[in-house]
Structure formats: structure tokens, C-alpha cells
Image 1 (cartoon, rainbow, N blue to C red):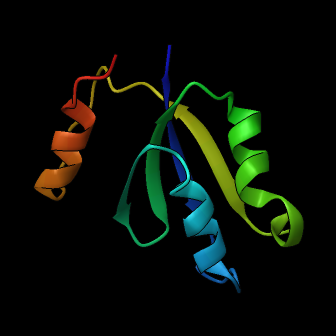
Image 2: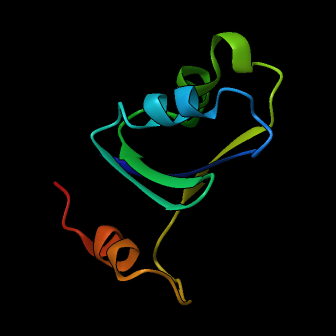
Length: 89
């Protein structure tokens, strides 16, 4: 069964596009603020981190957290709410 993960990284990362491209390799993702993403995957949190940070990013600030969307509230773009509520199998 899949899990939701929140990914964030420092804006000072020199090759941020590489990190973005690695995150986009996951089939189910959304970029909702500059360096803030959610993904949905069967991978474990350590595997997600290692996939994103391998190579030149091992010393950069990158955080991956498992997220439970049982309760949330706020004001964000409508596409984020639709992505969270999307039915997944």
C-alpha cells in the first residue's frame, strides 16, 4: 500500500533541477510551493531520500517525511486539494 511523503529542500541547492527531475520520476507527485513536494509511492522513506539525494546532493539540506492526511486545514491552490483527495488504489 502506498504512502504519502512530504519532500523539501533548501533553495540554495545549486542543481535544484536535478532534484526536481528525480522527484518527477515518481508517478504520483505534486509541487505545491517552490521547494515543497508531496509524492505517493510504495517506497520506504529512506529509499525516497536516497533516490533524491544520491551523488552530488548528499551534503545538501533535504528532508523527507511520511505524511498522514487524516486531518489537514489551510489555504492552498485548488490543485493541491484535488491531488490529496484523489482516489488511489
